[in-house]
Image 1: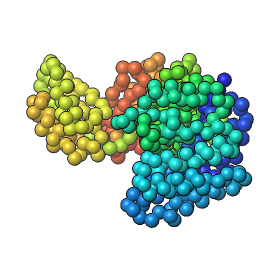
Image 2 (image 1 turned 135 degrees about the vertical axis):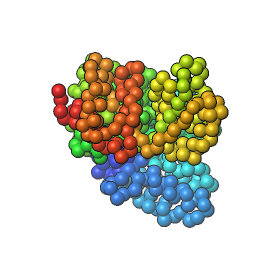
Image 3 (image 1 turned 30 degrees about the vertical axis):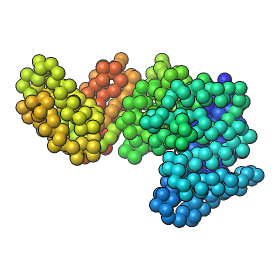
Image 4 (image 1 turned 90 degrees about the horizontal axis):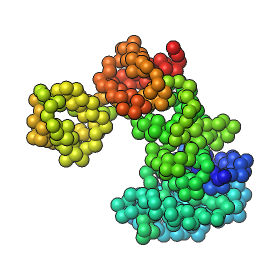
Length: 439
Ligand code: ASP
């Protein structure tokens, strides 16, 4: 039985945090494959090393002097090395990095050095082998992650290894040029490694004791979630749940490997389990609530729309032609609404409107801005009657006007559209009716 353990930036921000991480790893002999992030913030006013690297590289790219900024990065690592009393020098690595910065190796290369260097320290500290992610994680020429090639290479490379440290966040194109995932991408690396070694668990260690039912910035001390399915988490991540990178689910999902979100600062907490499927009922009908502001609704009316074959396709074509992706498309008999991101849509709205007129010949188009979408997600909704009714009555009691409601056929989620200004009130009302006041 082998576990992959990924540690986020705040878990590795200082020597003190590194010590906690080592204690966690040594406490379970199955924790043999480690994926570190770059050092994160030590306190609220601190800067993540990844951000320091981006800023430093910006100067290098403009041909400006970047010594001071590079020195600050060196100091961050040296403090960790000294605090752990390691006999390790990163001088050679920094020489190469400085040269590559001068040669303008790219901002992906620059950012990736945060994980690369932290990986070297971690491997040295644990006595584990270091495997450079650039050798095993592949991207194609369009920058798309190559799942199968990576899986084969990783399997081959890690085969027979007792233990290893594989830095998170980056890989490389076939020619060796470094490419990163999007921000927070070390979560994806952890998942890729877990799939390759067929781990029994992918432990993702962070600074919270698991996934919360709702955003703590909106709900005061929301309850945590014990078990959530991949599908539920995917719905919630898409709507802004920040715990795990939204793409981190795919690699482990293929092998049905559960993810356990844990807290480095409270290792005794069991955290949240993210699983393929479970017979465990969630404590409440809903598992989680998440949402985002900043949407526009484009309402299209046309008499007899319902009987016109191809109407929807023509409308959506106008969005496609302008490179705009849509979020939801609720429809009525003579009306269809397309929800889009306001910031993407704003600059192209008139092209889209004229495109719809040209392609679909509607009677009327009406645009409504400043809307928010809220996803209420829960595997328990399928077997419970009246969920939508409870949401509606809670929102009505809080004077929130519901602009749209859309229930997926999987009965796993209900999406609600409200005005941006009603967003927080709506989330509070939904949380209260399902979690605080149980009927
Ligand atoms: N260090 C990178 C970031 O700050 C990746 C990660 O931490 O997952 O986004």
